[in-house]
Amino acid sequence: MSRRVLQALTGDRTPGTATAVHELALGPEPMLADADAQLALWTLYELHYRGFDGVQDDLEWDPTVLRLRRTLERRFERELRAVASARLTGPGTESWSEAGTDVGTQLLALSQTGRGPSPAAHLHRHAGREDVVDFLRERSVQQLKESDPQSFVLPRLHGPAKVALAELLYDEFGGGRPERLHQRLYAEAMAGVGLDPTYGAYVDQVSATSLAMANAVSFFGLHRRLAGAAMGHLAVFEATSSVPSRKVAAGMERLGLPDAVAAYFHEHVEADAVHEHLAAHDICGAMVAEDPDQRASVLLGAAVCLHLDEVSAAELMSRWTPTEVAS
Image (cartoon, rainbow, N blue to C red; front, side, top):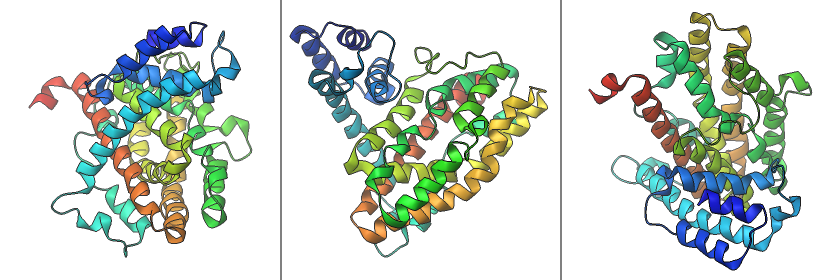
């Protein structure tokens, strides 16, 4: 599928190629575990970011290309909604749908329901250099464009929610200092362990889940109807970042890695402790206060963030400590 998408982007947009992609994209297997489908979708989303050498810029809005993307997105959305529903419904989950409860409080409580192994704890105490390299490589497809997907949401908000998101993004984009841009800090961390910090360098090596994590935020951010999901995802991402970042930074220092490797994570210890309240209360809270129907969308994004993070954690730990995970 990804090969056919590349063919479509580099000149072969014949009906046969488009039909082949559509047929492949409608396959019955779960897309969340399909690296080829996730790579195809990532490639189509990148037309809205930095694009590709040798690919015409105007293909960003080409009807045939958008139709290919939409076919994949429908399958992707069905699965995202299914995993979110499984997390938000059932015995003991009634509080997630209580309309009278402050959504910011709900989001912060939901962020504490994570299950499964902790890569951060492993990196803190036990990991070797190879595990750190693997971790940074897997997260690169998401963190090298950190906060870019959320910036698509800014013009879709107004009032207090817009102001709060602008404040958060200002920090993420370096607070006016290019050298503090979080994307740049992550690239420097990668270079510090010998990885190629070029944007997208490892897109064909990372797991389907890592691609899905990046694709989910692009999907939410690029659709106005899913602005609430984009902000719910952001709130949980920020709320589950500060403590793990402290552990990861300590683990990198334990290994004696260059200061630049831990610097990205040190930056997120304090920043995300503030950002979680900005995102949960000042952004999501303001959105739901203005439009109560946004609650379901906000919780969708939050649940998707938790689910994908847990799947990714299990995958990483199965590689790093296979015997431990199996037991």
